[in-house]
Image (cartoon, rainbow, N blue to C red; front, top):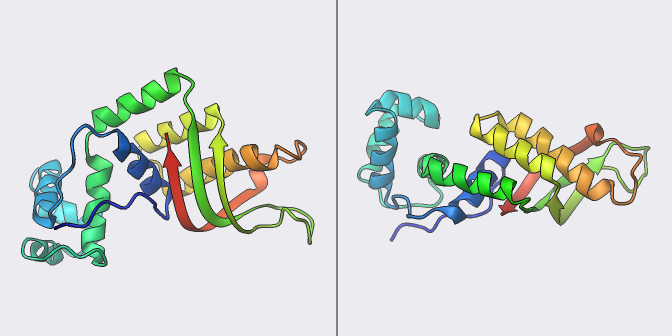
Length: 193
């Protein structure tokens, strides 16, 4: 039986896509062969374009047709990420619109190096933190908008850093500015909405 989808991620892009999976109305393809067939349909059957998008050699896609499911295989992980990214885009858009129109909440749980660039020895220096925070409304919209236009990971991480700075550091120190909040070396990241 194919492995279940993981819900946590190490990138903002993947974490948003995995949170969107909670809103799906149908399950995506589960076997490596069915996932590959779905992705090939998305590229009009162009295996070279799909291999380029997944950042794998084209001949490795052929091996997926005969492979057994394996969670540790990087090619299967790349295929899984892309299926999750592309599955039910209208459902994803509808969920985001509903959340934004109803003043919805977004929670983020993470373990990463987070800090505020401060004087040496400050308790706000970047350090490994394991936190669960509620994000404020303007940042939720910024994250959704950036993800809809396939913004690069750096931009999504900058938006999330600003959101975390506003949620965590501004609670006790309103004089801080969010531009100097850093989020690095993400071990675990999960959104809830």
